[in-house]
Amino acid sequence: MLGEPGICEEYVMKVTASDVLLSSERTFMKTVDVKESLRAWIGDRRPNFESTGRTLGSASSPAVVSLSADAVKKQKLADQAQAGTPAVIKSPIIPSFQRDRL
Image (cartoon, rainbow, N blue to C red; front, side, top):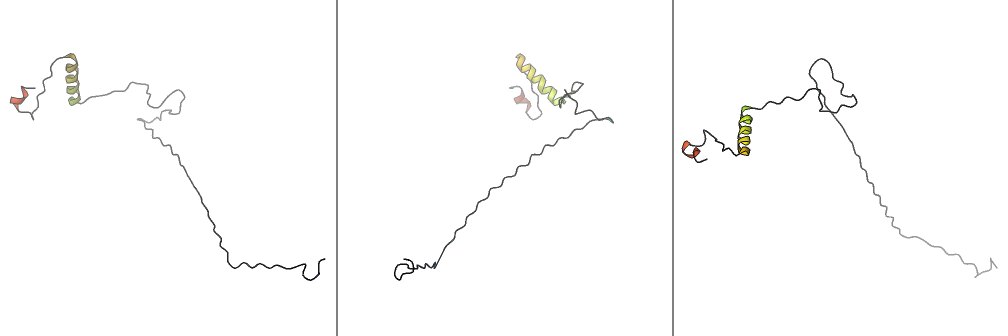
């Protein structure tokens, strides 16, 4: 039956316009971790910082701390205040007639 006139028709479709929409998305994240340390020592021999069982900050000898004269005075005043002894403060900024009221 093919080939007979009127039975097999040919259809033609023409595309007159088209739109194409492209979309893209990209996410990028970069992390950088930096660990720095500075170790210093006094003398000609470098201590073994990497030895096991020893942590940073630990020393073979106890730390020595010295206080300024002002800090010693403040500590004495604080000790007197805790003991209940009234502290006497003499300051050149406070006039003498007001110092007695403290």
